[in-house]
Length: 270
Image 1 (cartoon, rainbow, N blue to C red):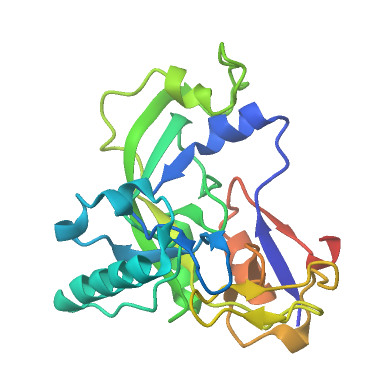
Image 2 (spheres, rainbow, N blue to C red):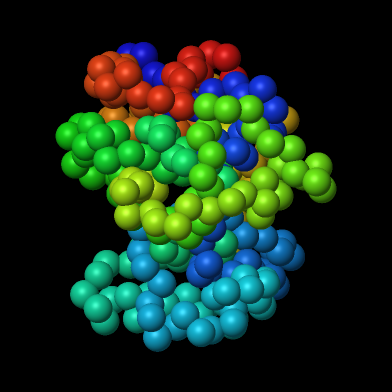
Protein backbone atom coordinates (compact mmCIF):
# COMPACT_ATOMS: atom_id res chain seq x y z
CA UNK A 1 0.00 0.00 0.00
CA UNK A 2 1.30 3.43 -0.98
CA UNK A 3 0.47 6.55 1.03
CA UNK A 4 0.90 10.25 0.34
CA UNK A 5 0.96 13.35 2.49
CA UNK A 6 -1.47 15.94 1.14
CA UNK A 7 0.68 19.04 1.41
CA UNK A 8 1.03 22.68 0.47
CA UNK A 9 3.53 23.65 -2.25
CA UNK A 10 6.90 25.17 -1.46
CA UNK A 11 6.29 28.91 -1.53
CA UNK A 12 8.97 31.45 -2.29
CA UNK A 13 8.31 33.25 0.99
CA UNK A 14 5.95 33.54 3.95
CA UNK A 15 4.50 36.57 2.16
CA UNK A 16 3.48 34.41 -0.78
CA UNK A 17 1.95 31.81 1.54
CA UNK A 18 -0.21 34.43 3.26
CA UNK A 19 -1.11 36.10 -0.03
CA UNK A 20 -2.27 32.88 -1.70
CA UNK A 21 -3.97 31.13 1.23
CA UNK A 22 -5.15 33.75 3.70
CA UNK A 23 -6.12 32.82 7.26
CA UNK A 24 -9.03 30.75 8.56
CA UNK A 25 -10.52 31.73 11.91
CA UNK A 26 -12.89 29.80 14.16
CA UNK A 27 -14.42 32.41 16.48
CA UNK A 28 -15.86 29.80 18.85
CA UNK A 29 -14.38 26.77 20.51
CA UNK A 30 -13.62 24.84 23.67
CA UNK A 31 -11.09 26.67 25.87
CA UNK A 32 -7.87 25.17 27.14
CA UNK A 33 -7.72 23.42 30.50
CA UNK A 34 -5.76 23.75 33.74
CA UNK A 35 -5.61 20.16 34.95
CA UNK A 36 -5.26 19.63 38.69
CA UNK A 37 -4.42 15.95 38.25
CA UNK A 38 -1.49 16.01 35.79
CA UNK A 39 -0.56 19.69 36.27
CA UNK A 40 -0.66 20.50 32.55
CA UNK A 41 -2.23 23.61 31.03
CA UNK A 42 -3.00 22.85 27.43
CA UNK A 43 -5.37 22.89 24.48
CA UNK A 44 -5.30 20.84 21.30
CA UNK A 45 -5.85 21.80 17.67
CA UNK A 46 -8.72 19.55 16.59
CA UNK A 47 -11.49 21.02 14.43
CA UNK A 48 -15.05 19.67 14.69
CA UNK A 49 -17.73 19.88 11.96
CA UNK A 50 -20.22 21.10 14.57
CA UNK A 51 -21.71 24.60 14.68
CA UNK A 52 -21.33 26.36 17.99
CA UNK A 53 -24.84 26.41 19.54
CA UNK A 54 -26.46 29.82 19.04
CA UNK A 55 -27.50 30.02 22.69
CA UNK A 56 -23.85 29.79 23.79
CA UNK A 57 -22.19 32.17 21.34
CA UNK A 58 -22.19 35.06 23.79
CA UNK A 59 -20.27 33.02 26.34
CA UNK A 60 -16.91 34.64 26.95
CA UNK A 61 -15.11 31.35 27.51
CA UNK A 62 -16.06 30.09 24.04
CA UNK A 63 -14.69 33.24 22.39
CA UNK A 64 -11.61 34.14 24.43
CA UNK A 65 -10.59 30.51 25.01
CA UNK A 66 -8.44 31.12 28.12
CA UNK A 67 -7.74 27.88 30.05
CA UNK A 68 -10.25 26.94 32.75
CA UNK A 69 -9.82 24.82 35.89
CA UNK A 70 -10.75 21.21 35.18
CA UNK A 71 -14.06 21.14 37.10
CA UNK A 72 -15.33 24.29 35.38
CA UNK A 73 -14.05 22.95 32.06
CA UNK A 74 -15.97 19.70 32.53
CA UNK A 75 -19.22 21.57 33.20
CA UNK A 76 -18.75 23.72 30.09
CA UNK A 77 -18.11 20.67 27.90
CA UNK A 78 -21.27 19.02 29.21
CA UNK A 79 -23.26 22.18 28.51
CA UNK A 80 -22.01 22.33 24.90
CA UNK A 81 -22.77 18.65 24.34
CA UNK A 82 -26.27 19.03 25.77
CA UNK A 83 -27.03 22.02 23.52
CA UNK A 84 -25.79 20.18 20.41
CA UNK A 85 -27.82 17.06 21.20
CA UNK A 86 -30.97 19.10 21.84
CA UNK A 87 -30.95 20.17 18.21
CA UNK A 88 -30.78 16.51 17.13
CA UNK A 89 -27.06 16.20 16.38
CA UNK A 90 -24.55 13.74 17.70
CA UNK A 91 -21.67 15.27 19.66
CA UNK A 92 -18.38 13.50 20.32
CA UNK A 93 -16.47 13.77 23.55
CA UNK A 94 -15.04 17.27 23.57
CA UNK A 95 -11.37 17.98 24.15
CA UNK A 96 -9.58 21.11 25.37
CA UNK A 97 -8.89 23.43 22.44
CA UNK A 98 -11.47 21.98 20.03
CA UNK A 99 -12.55 24.47 17.35
CA UNK A 100 -16.24 24.71 16.45
CA UNK A 101 -17.87 25.99 13.28
CA UNK A 102 -18.23 28.35 11.55
CA UNK A 103 -14.87 28.86 9.90
CA UNK A 104 -14.31 32.38 8.57
CA UNK A 105 -11.77 33.05 5.83
CA UNK A 106 -9.87 36.29 5.23
CA UNK A 107 -7.75 36.12 2.08
CA UNK A 108 -5.81 39.04 0.54
CA UNK A 109 -6.10 37.74 -3.04
CA UNK A 110 -8.87 36.34 -5.22
CA UNK A 111 -9.15 32.62 -4.39
CA UNK A 112 -8.73 30.67 -7.61
CA UNK A 113 -7.13 27.48 -6.32
CA UNK A 114 -8.50 24.06 -5.37
CA UNK A 115 -6.63 23.94 -2.07
CA UNK A 116 -6.11 26.78 0.42
CA UNK A 117 -3.65 26.10 3.24
CA UNK A 118 -4.93 28.56 5.80
CA UNK A 119 -4.88 26.43 8.95
CA UNK A 120 -2.79 23.56 10.32
CA UNK A 121 -4.54 20.20 10.48
CA UNK A 122 -7.32 21.02 8.01
CA UNK A 123 -7.44 22.43 4.51
CA UNK A 124 -9.98 24.52 2.62
CA UNK A 125 -11.01 22.97 -0.70
CA UNK A 126 -13.06 23.73 -3.80
CA UNK A 127 -16.39 22.16 -4.73
CA UNK A 128 -14.81 19.74 -7.18
CA UNK A 129 -12.23 18.48 -4.67
CA UNK A 130 -15.01 17.97 -2.14
CA UNK A 131 -16.85 15.86 -4.72
CA UNK A 132 -13.87 13.57 -5.28
CA UNK A 133 -13.21 13.08 -1.56
CA UNK A 134 -16.87 12.37 -0.85
CA UNK A 135 -16.93 9.77 -3.63
CA UNK A 136 -14.23 7.71 -1.87
CA UNK A 137 -14.93 8.55 1.79
CA UNK A 138 -18.40 7.71 3.04
CA UNK A 139 -17.29 8.36 6.60
CA UNK A 140 -14.28 9.86 8.33
CA UNK A 141 -14.17 13.18 6.46
CA UNK A 142 -16.62 16.05 6.92
CA UNK A 143 -16.97 19.31 5.02
CA UNK A 144 -18.08 22.58 6.58
CA UNK A 145 -18.96 25.60 4.39
CA UNK A 146 -16.45 28.41 4.80
CA UNK A 147 -17.69 31.97 5.23
CA UNK A 148 -15.75 34.53 3.20
CA UNK A 149 -15.28 37.68 5.26
CA UNK A 150 -12.60 39.67 3.44
CA UNK A 151 -11.38 38.90 -0.07
CA UNK A 152 -8.70 40.97 -1.77
CA UNK A 153 -8.92 42.27 -5.34
CA UNK A 154 -5.51 41.15 -6.58
CA UNK A 155 -4.75 37.91 -8.40
CA UNK A 156 -2.74 35.37 -6.41
CA UNK A 157 -0.49 34.74 -9.43
CA UNK A 158 1.29 38.09 -9.09
CA UNK A 159 4.17 38.60 -6.63
CA UNK A 160 3.03 38.94 -3.04
CA UNK A 161 3.08 42.48 -1.63
CA UNK A 162 5.19 43.22 1.43
CA UNK A 163 3.23 45.09 4.13
CA UNK A 164 4.66 48.14 5.85
CA UNK A 165 5.06 46.22 9.10
CA UNK A 166 7.07 43.48 7.40
CA UNK A 167 4.79 40.84 8.97
CA UNK A 168 3.23 38.37 6.47
CA UNK A 169 -0.03 38.28 8.45
CA UNK A 170 -0.55 42.00 7.83
CA UNK A 171 -0.95 41.44 4.08
CA UNK A 172 -4.60 40.69 4.85
CA UNK A 173 -5.09 43.94 6.78
CA UNK A 174 -3.70 46.06 3.93
CA UNK A 175 -5.53 44.28 1.08
CA UNK A 176 -8.16 46.22 -0.85
CA UNK A 177 -11.35 44.10 -0.64
CA UNK A 178 -13.75 43.22 -3.43
CA UNK A 179 -17.23 44.64 -3.07
CA UNK A 180 -19.12 41.49 -4.01
CA UNK A 181 -18.21 37.93 -3.09
CA UNK A 182 -21.22 36.07 -4.48
CA UNK A 183 -19.26 34.89 -7.54
CA UNK A 184 -16.46 33.36 -5.44
CA UNK A 185 -16.42 29.75 -4.31
CA UNK A 186 -18.01 27.91 -2.67
CA UNK A 187 -15.20 26.66 -0.46
CA UNK A 188 -15.31 24.06 2.31
CA UNK A 189 -13.14 23.21 5.26
CA UNK A 190 -12.14 19.56 4.92
CA UNK A 191 -12.16 18.08 8.42
CA UNK A 192 -10.38 14.73 8.71
CA UNK A 193 -11.83 12.72 11.60
CA UNK A 194 -9.91 9.44 11.35
CA UNK A 195 -6.28 8.73 12.12
CA UNK A 196 -3.73 5.97 11.72
CA UNK A 197 -2.38 3.74 14.43
CA UNK A 198 0.51 5.23 16.40
CA UNK A 199 3.84 5.51 14.57
CA UNK A 200 6.87 3.61 15.90
CA UNK A 201 7.68 4.92 19.38
CA UNK A 202 4.55 7.08 19.35
CA UNK A 203 2.38 5.11 21.75
CA UNK A 204 1.36 7.21 24.77
CA UNK A 205 3.56 6.69 27.81
CA UNK A 206 0.59 7.73 29.95
CA UNK A 207 -2.85 9.32 29.63
CA UNK A 208 -4.31 11.67 32.22
CA UNK A 209 -7.59 10.29 33.57
CA UNK A 210 -8.94 13.82 34.13
CA UNK A 211 -8.07 15.86 31.02
CA UNK A 212 -7.22 13.05 28.58
CA UNK A 213 -3.79 14.42 27.69
CA UNK A 214 -1.47 11.81 26.18
CA UNK A 215 2.18 11.95 27.15
CA UNK A 216 4.45 10.87 24.28
CA UNK A 217 8.22 10.43 24.27
CA UNK A 218 9.18 12.56 21.25
CA UNK A 219 12.74 11.24 21.34
CA UNK A 220 11.50 7.71 20.63
CA UNK A 221 8.76 8.63 18.17
CA UNK A 222 9.56 8.17 14.47
CA UNK A 223 7.36 10.09 12.04
CA UNK A 224 6.53 7.68 9.23
CA UNK A 225 3.55 5.89 7.67
CA UNK A 226 3.57 2.14 7.11
CA UNK A 227 0.95 -0.41 6.03
CA UNK A 228 0.81 -1.78 9.58
CA UNK A 229 -0.39 1.61 10.83
CA UNK A 230 -3.27 1.81 8.34
CA UNK A 231 -6.83 1.33 9.62
CA UNK A 232 -8.42 1.15 6.16
CA UNK A 233 -9.45 4.80 5.70
CA UNK A 234 -8.75 6.47 2.30
CA UNK A 235 -8.07 9.83 4.00
CA UNK A 236 -6.80 10.16 7.56
CA UNK A 237 -4.41 11.95 9.88
CA UNK A 238 -1.04 10.46 10.74
CA UNK A 239 -1.43 9.79 14.47
CA UNK A 240 0.39 12.21 16.82
CA UNK A 241 0.72 14.74 13.95
CA UNK A 242 -1.41 17.06 11.82
CA UNK A 243 -0.30 15.46 8.54
CA UNK A 244 -3.17 14.60 6.18
CA UNK A 245 -2.49 11.24 4.52
CA UNK A 246 -4.25 9.83 1.45
CA UNK A 247 -4.04 6.49 -0.33
CA UNK A 248 -2.72 6.08 -3.85
CA UNK A 249 -6.29 5.75 -5.14
CA UNK A 250 -7.25 9.13 -3.70
CA UNK A 251 -4.14 10.71 -5.15
CA UNK A 252 -4.95 9.29 -8.60
CA UNK A 253 -8.52 10.59 -8.49
CA UNK A 254 -7.44 14.03 -7.33
CA UNK A 255 -4.68 14.28 -9.93
CA UNK A 256 -7.27 13.59 -12.64
CA UNK A 257 -8.66 17.04 -11.78
CA UNK A 258 -5.25 18.65 -12.26
CA UNK A 259 -5.73 20.33 -8.88
CA UNK A 260 -4.02 23.58 -8.03
CA UNK A 261 -2.00 24.67 -4.99
CA UNK A 262 -1.27 21.17 -3.71
CA UNK A 263 1.43 18.53 -3.87
CA UNK A 264 1.67 14.89 -2.84
CA UNK A 265 4.68 14.10 -0.67
CA UNK A 266 5.97 10.66 0.21
CA UNK A 267 5.89 9.99 3.98
CA UNK A 268 9.43 8.66 3.56
CA UNK A 269 10.56 12.30 3.26
CA UNK A 270 9.28 13.36 6.70
